[in-house]
Length: 339
Image (cartoon, rainbow, N blue to C red; front, top):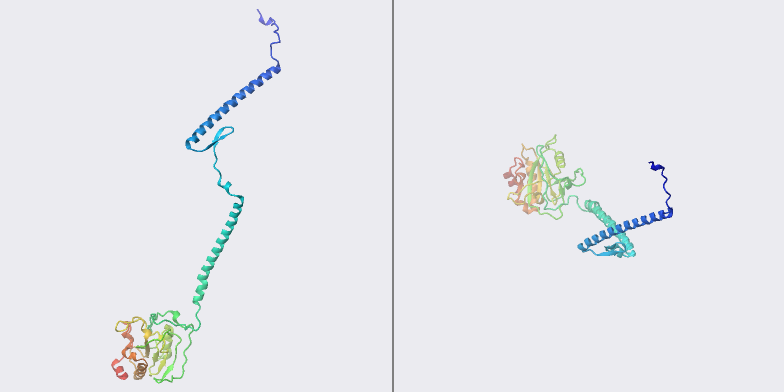
């Protein structure tokens, strides 16, 4: 039997929903579903908020209730909110003043350093007016001095002790004194005037000759050697017995160098209290009779002006173990001349 040919009976149309009812039904179903989902979400959020509150309560932190979710953590007040607006302006102005003060302080420090390093040093280096170039105290050790002999003379005198300018000595008329006749050839090096008068109690006798070439007895060449080594004795006696004054007796002259008195006292300061006399002759010679006579006359004069000299008439060899002058000197004969 073919059921397809059987015609279905027409059902009544009054129980079937209309299109509008279908749409209204679907709309209500959709709204119901959405409300359930929203309710589920709110329950989840509420549960999470409860858990968060529980954890905060265990930590001891204050909480506040949120209108929508419940209690919330109370935020601490920010310190900046308590500062009035005018205080911010005052703080900025104070910072400007502090920075300006720091800049001024740094500038003053730099100015002080500059003055200390440059201006102060310049003032110290400027020589004072009316003060001698070689005005040194008596208690300073004089420089090592070796009177030229055989071309092996040396000197350790510092250059700053020399006068600022050297002048060639000029011959002049003999001094008009009660002592022996002398020719002034005051040198511009090798001696200085002390600040306080010195007491002279020692006489040191030296010997030297020209080692520069030419006449070994040349006074000019011996003086030139003195200039080279920046040394000087107070008196110089040439081979013919002529006495030259090279430095004032009141001055400290660089003739003895380092040494010690025979009694072991007053080491390395002998220049300060002594007078030096130089005899010109070779180390293979002896003083000439004219030199002995001139030296004796000068010594008697010095003894009369400086009585303490009588106790200390010495040779350079008597104060220094490295010196041998005066060479071949007859002390017994010389003593007989000055008695």
